[in-house]
Image 1 (cartoon, helix red, strand yellow):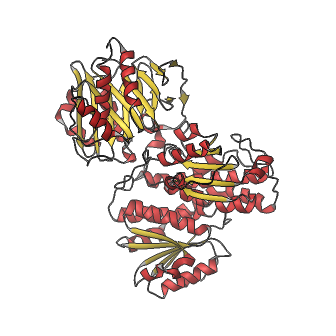
Image 2 (cartoon, one colour):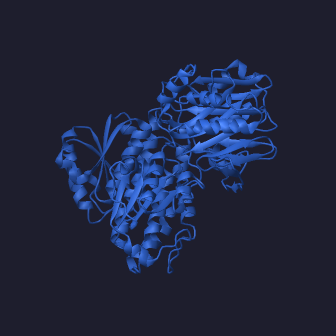
Length: 612
């Protein structure tokens, strides 16, 4: 969703803010803006459209200040426009604010402020924030920065919803103020300068040392210091964490797009996610968990909860947990989970997956599980993210920054880590089988097998050209292959804008086959030896109705029946989605390129969905 940056230091702020906003473009946005503290007060430049449009505004070169804030907006309240874009100011033009999140009670706050003489220019929820701060600040003695922090505290206590807020005020030419709740924010520590961002990659080229804010913690930043306060404005101490990401991992490294780079990074990200967690002949090592056999035997059910691609990754794990661990497992969409009143007890184990660790629906579902006494595990790619701080246990994939909006390497890394967790559970429970040891062996071989797929992409490119103008594409599979059909369908929708649907192959004859007509494309996935003949039969039903077919498989089938067959290496069906998804990722990518679309920043989508 929205991206925020901030800088205070000895250098000119404007170029640093623009650089940070450009690095946050992958989050998705429709407008951008910055505010810089000049000698005469706050100066703001904002517009609808891309960040580079700010550089075309003549006045931007006049900004000389060394402290400022910036924002990329993804519209939630009010259409994309210059007026609705951030930063927003109070009526007196003394306070400038950028905000990531949703203010759920903004209508009541607008009414309150209107009754107190305030007027509003935009349709946004955010505009209430600078005016609330002004309202409370005017009631203080206005002696020092703590009076302003008190006003900020009173303002945010009025807010219902989620927020990460950066604030400038004309009375403080050398300090900026921040606070967060349920929305991401990191503070980068430099030498005689400090940074703020909603995401680490935006400021990774400037520092690798980061402070992490918890909910309702305030920070006051100056050139030489960062002071932290809790909700009661008691001063607290924080130590920065070093994030050992390579700056180049947030660059394209010669690839045409971030998405293509990230598809080809999957062998590396999986190797690093595996690390020393599994070794043949010895029990798996998950230092992050301390589960006992007694605890796992007492678990009444496992919930895996996530959104989008992360939910699809979770779907692949159900079979392993049930077959090897005999743990009843349900996979839930996070946005539905807490509203269906799930049966959660202290004997329930909940696993929450979020690439960014800031997915609002997933965090809310996690909090619900904790309220009911469940044990919680977070799986994320971002150290110190909100979800990892809320959960009882946290495990990290080691995929490195994923810049493209459509997730690829995070998905496969999540499946690998989930499979390792399932193996760990099985071994704690005392399961010892040749099949379990073979599964560990196959996980270790996954990176090399993905490399084999990536070395042979011509068939995928050719098929992408043939169907790039399609309006409808169907994906089918059975068992664990159906979960890959879901992910393949999602990828194609996300970046090509082609209508795509996924179905369990056996369900075709129960309705969806009515949509099959001459020339339509159906993509089948077959990696399970037991179910492959049945999927072949289902595909024959669409072939006889004139469908074009692409099959991704490692099974011995009659290839002459289908228009194109992409062969992948043999692998256990339990982890086959890690391989079978790669051709589908590439297919979506090449179709999008054929259609001349922006692969990394598809319309209407955001990388980190930090609002419900």
